[in-house]
Image (cartoon, rainbow, N blue to C red; front, side, top):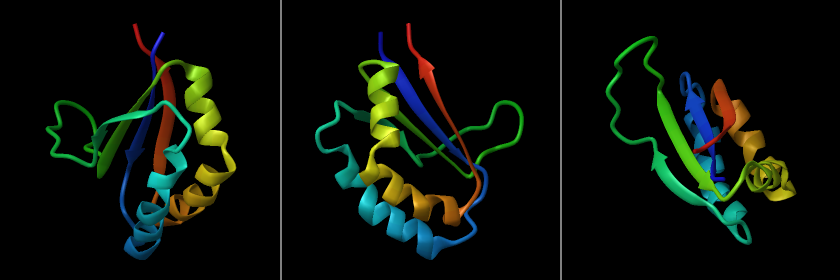
Length: 95
């Protein structure tokens, strides 16, 4: 069953750190079966607090999503994302 890694940025607080993250993150997908479905595109808030940005990445299953997220390459990149602003990140099973 597919699974989705969903990243919701509340607010960008350090653009320089986000730029470093952006430069590193693409390489982290090598060897992982991932498909980026949405990345910081135009959004329309329907309810709640509007996030600053949203990313949705499809994986074949939750184990693949977690393996990518926990990989040393992604964790190295993520260190810059953590400094760039607060995020909520979840892995959710698809149907």
